Image 1 (tube, one colour):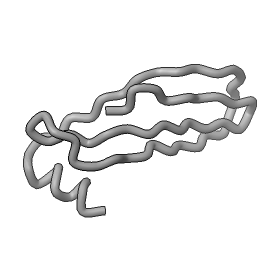
Image 2 (image 1 turned 90 degrees about the vertical axis):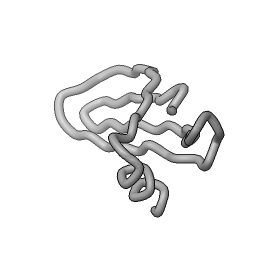
Image 3 (image 1 turned 90 degrees about the horizontal axis):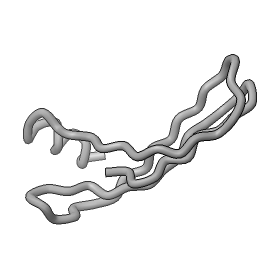
Length: 65
């Protein structure tokens, strides 16, 4: 879960946010979201993002690094 992700740019842009990884309702780790973009853009934005894993294998692959 990423409670707040900041996004901004003018021609070149980027996004950054930190979040927590949960399993069975307990925090099992932390994660970072980093994204870079290029193209026609101007301004800023803040949003929240939640990621769900399809199965246990997907969760284990994500948390293994």
